Image 1 (cartoon, rainbow, N blue to C red):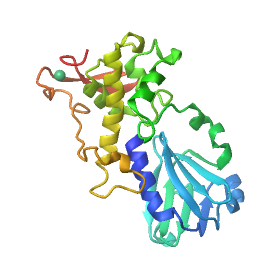
Image 2 (cartoon, rainbow, N blue to C red; image 1 turned 180 degrees about the horizontal axis):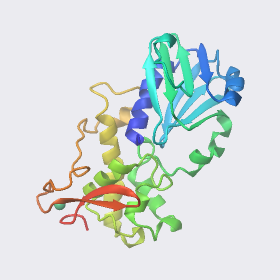
Image 3 (cartoon, helix red, strand yellow; image 1 turned 90 degrees about the vertical axis):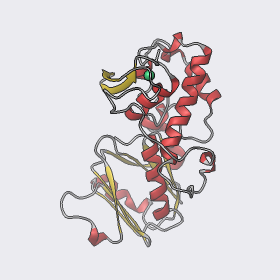
Image 4 (cartoon, rainbow, N blue to C red; image 1 turned 30 degrees about the vertical axis):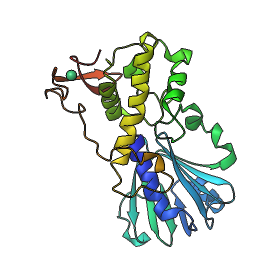
Length: 269
Ligand SMILES: [Zn+2]
């Protein structure tokens, strides 16, 4: 499943194709959406934005396409409609003079009035987005004070989009490793220093993963990544049995909150 960094990189790619262009071709598989397509067809695309793991494509006239890929959704980019492969049709096709973007197998696609998006069920539950330039460590630490998070483990919270939007399974292992925290810790038991370490890792790790998807040139509006290292390698994820990069243990694999988690008992407490 794509996590925040992959979703943001996809939004950048879609922006190149769509933003400031007119949607000359729109096709939905869903008959109800297909009947509604005129609200975006012929309209100019204003912005493509990632929020959590959802993509929002806003057009002039006040409408936005909401798309969430969940486990299996994926996009294809082609120069012309005829170049789309035969077989199961894409759930959504968007075409401009620059090319065609087609979304396959994504279960959640809908059309929203842009000014009503805050009421969209997935978006309305999102916590601070770790890739939102306006989110900083102070905001994350304040959000950690939300009472309903207090008794939950970090293993659970770091997959919860209401706790930190854009997080996902590989990020969970890497964030906990950088923060030197055990996945079994309960949030309310963390010291102030540990919360600070967690907040910093929640920002650093996803931003490095996202930054590494772009070479020298940052996409427009992403200047906040200018000081972020462009290199990202897994230090623990899928490295069970390897020596800990900090040199004090062996990486192990556990199944926590239903997903694989990799960590080091030697340095994560
Ligand atoms: Zn270690």
